[in-house]
Image 1 (cartoon, rainbow, N blue to C red):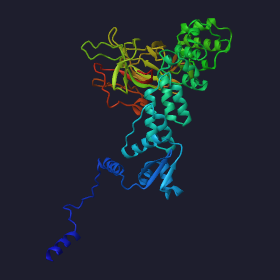
Image 2 (image 1 turned 120 degrees about the vertical axis):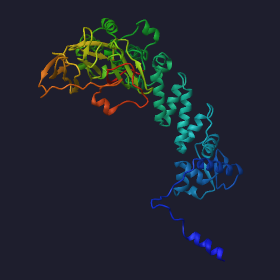
Image 3 (image 1 turned 90 degrees about the vertical axis):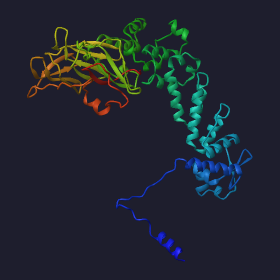
Length: 482
């Protein structure tokens, strides 16, 4: 009796914490869910505790009502939503094949789904009716793994039938990535015109040049042989040509097209594109939807700088940091000007290098300015500053670029100049109240950034800074996919 009283006392009074800040702990098992599934599968395999029979195509399948209700909205509404099926021992399932129902029940009990070309369509039909998103996604992924030029239209129809927007997007991506090859097939011309128009308008369309888009627009109406033999009529141009970004085509190609066209709206469009090429200095102020690069890719780019060698040789290299790979790569064969400590700005996706210094005849400040065009991968020298600036601050305000203060290797400056891209000219504006310059930065890569870059991008954690440079100017631009 005494032992029982002692045990009771121990149960009534819990262990007192050794310090006053003791808290409760919550433990979670990583194996519990899988163990629960194994237990339910064991019940099913043993035929224990079944409480509902699904009748599919006249055949019976026993199951556990609570597991079905927990697995999808369809059965939850049926067994917990006040419907008559709540009281029925046998429930008739319409619009689903027996094999597909067995597939789905196997997934519910095991989380595994085996798909093949022979069962994927009926499984997808059943999953859409029973509202099981995971199985729908698995079926879509399986179909995409087998998509080719011959069956893509059938899969499009399946996506439209069941309103599968994710599958439609995957099919669109397939065509966008394989556009040049797919546009030369008969299946391409069987797509709805609205679908092709949307694809040709996309920034994600992967082509090596805009001429391929022009040819793709024609191939919807003509055979490859007709296009190559120039046996086409452009008197009333196809609507798809509206999607072509003619200013991105090479000037020589545009000139040949312009010369063979009769007076027409298309000829006027080509003439405008030619004017875009001829007014190179004004291109940043002529930007619009048809001059936009076909890419959603943005990256950090670096220009010029000084090699970290005793000779302090200036670099003419340009590199980009791929945010997907975290690696620096050379991105242009067109050599950048040899500069360091220059200002940098981005206006309408053109990169401007402003002033800086060089060591051509001993280090001195520069007034020269350059502009890089990622559309055609080339540099263009714009109007020089009215005086030399190095270690200056450069910023974009509205449609103007401002070069602020710096130094000229003799004195610090307070002068501020404003660049107008519509006139390709610099003009003095109100100076600063005192002379200032950007402080020299130390270390292997003391790059400076526009505030937008620091705020929105920063350095990807997986990317290392490019070695071998003391000074390099960096910014973010839109460019073609690497």
